[in-house]
Image (cartoon, rainbow, N blue to C red):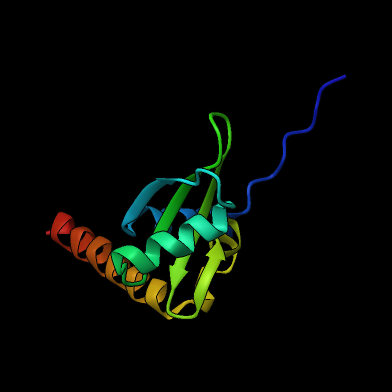
Length: 108
């Protein structure tokens, strides 16, 4: 019996592409919980939003967080709801303008 493929959400794919444009920081959680390690790293380094933190929990597991003006969020939530974050909307608009500019120059 063939397995049905899981449908990929276009909204989430778009959010993932936008998050790829944001600066990323890779850290290890050590003895702390991953979210605590992410918060401590943000405080120690003075990281300004928007940023993505990839926290390595152990050799097999990593957690992704998005640092926004509103606080720290899970990256999966942000991928699905990227339109709720003003800092990502500005990135989205810049990306759209660049692709539009590329499209207009290609047609001339």
